[in-house]
Length: 357
Image (cartoon, rainbow, N blue to C red; front, side, top):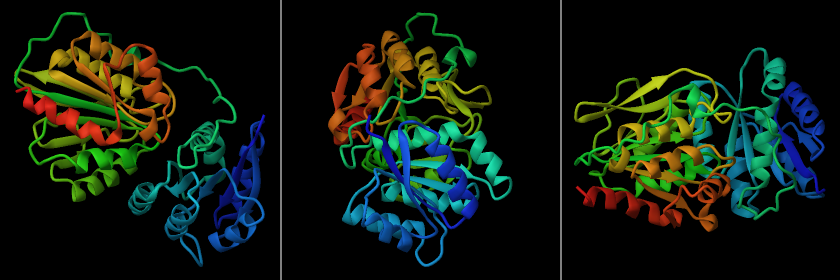
């Protein structure tokens, strides 16, 4: 079994020590080096290039964002950002995601060592997901660790099966994970100001979704913002589920609203795509379009199938344009997907919903 080779770049000796120890304890991962800054890392990487880089943002001599852009321009390599959980750090990390990083792991300023140990599964799975990213067409080294996970039923029951009445109000529900920040930028930035109401789950930690939504809003013609409880879903607006909370669609008379709720992890995620998709199946049915895009795992596959059974149109991003084909692949395997399209075609599918008014 080929082991995933990792380079850790962080100016904190504690982070380097803990991250190295956590990754080295996995049978399919080996840390080939740990460096206090990008210049040292580049020197060591001349001898052996890693499959994945775990990268801090704020470092001396060269910051992580500059290093990332250099790497992606010269020799694209999957990068997992290990970033401080602050509003300022979130903004910079979103820039890093836009520059090509495939995942983000958070770290606090205090209690760092114990926090990293408590979230070791997130770190390990992020490294494994990155190793499967299409930036270098890497062959997977091994399957991710399987742990017990809840279904969307811990948040809301399945749809009753009653068909929703068709209305002129359309809803587009999008679910994505690894690679999704770049993919969503492509899709949403390509839409006109008048487009169907959109609800999005992007797997992302707490505090980062607000900065992500703000970035999208700055480059899109439609309004993009982090969802708040009871926000209306209206044409020309995209609502991003806040990190650390689930988002559900609700119908109030002729209007669609979102609920933002706490609850257990579903499919190891909060927010969960399955939770959103199930609520859309229940509340919008045939008035909805479900889109599942790049991401690792199977979150969203069950919910998309429920949407299809409720009469919704369902679309998956194709393998060639995905960073990680896990989520779309699983949805296709379960019969949840009516149509597979490249990333560049998803915007057209969304606008066909507007044309159906």
